[in-house]
Image 1 (cartoon, rainbow, N blue to C red):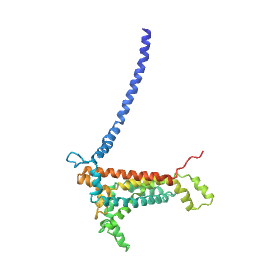
Image 2 (image 1 turned 30 degrees about the horizontal axis):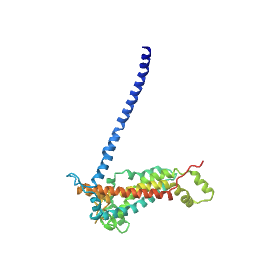
Image 3 (image 1 turned 90 degrees about the vertical axis):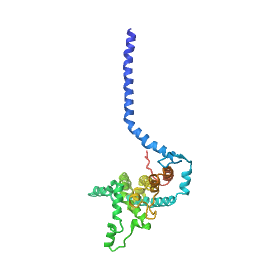
Image 4 (image 1 turned 180 degrees about the vertical axis):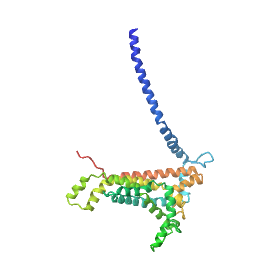
Length: 312
């Protein structure tokens, strides 16, 4: 009886420890369940569903009908404005992304000075990035209005020629490219972090060797900033190919499809014409294009991105 009692006394704390451990595990799963369920229901589930729908004819109000690769074939051969939307999107990307990279980098260099009140100016340039996209689009729509817009009013006061801006096919897309510079504050903050992470000892050593400001910029600042430039390039490229809000709010793709972005066409196929199958196929094609371009940028990074290595 004594041996049995001793064994039971030893086993009881072990069972309690296991129960407590199991309780902690259950609590952990309960705490993460909202995030996991949200990811499964609102992200992974719709992604898998859209991949299936891309191979179907799905007019939304009827059950999807399997048609294989017909959506992908029709997208390239029968969609009237498909190539125009690709042209507009690519043109915007190859102009807006470099301008944004250069503009935000130059702005960061300007605001990386140790002068009184510099925080105020940094805040002023960053604030436009937190303004909702729809509000920004409406604001710029008023500013660039060809009849009573503030920009044309200023140009008239200065005796300069005015422009039709978004009302003219020739100038509509360039106007949107210039509008994209409104959001350079986001990239500026990232560049500022990179600039302030460059060791001051590198500049001091180069100055001792007689390097001037231009050489300091090209041989220290730019190489040390290439990882940051690489990050902003990837994010800017992805963002440019997903442009939608400004065109949807300001021009609806006009005039004469001059601002008919790919995402705007995708939106119309899905929610205007209820062609969910075609819209899903277009979404997956866009994903593949962005993935390929991102991989190409990553592959090229070994040629121009400098990663500082620790010397031991």
